[in-house]
Length: 107
Image 1 (cartoon, helix red, strand yellow):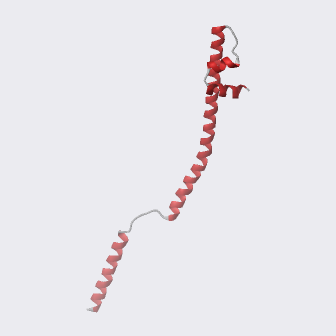
Image 2 (cartoon, one colour):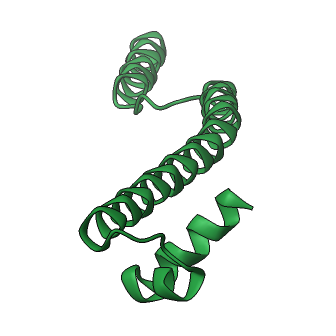
Image 3 (tube, rainbow, N blue to C red):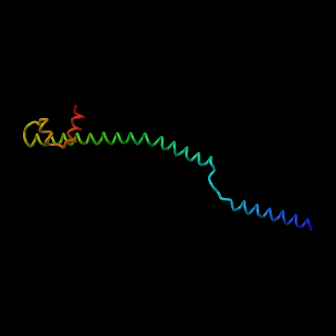
């Protein structure tokens, strides 16, 4: 009878252990999380400098467009009035922001 109880006890413990093993949750290990963070860090390190370069490029292209616009306005003024644009007249024709950018690129 003790053999039967020992067997039943072993079977009960085995069943409990297998049920516990089956109910364990699947999750990421610490190493997997570290690898993911490393990959994300490398991508960020590659992306940020490129973003700042693009910002500078866009700013330069915008300033070039402003210079071309001001030059076009100067040409239109000269055609309509048959005289050259003076610096004081240029300030009247364009906005203050356009004037600053134009002077920065032309000097």
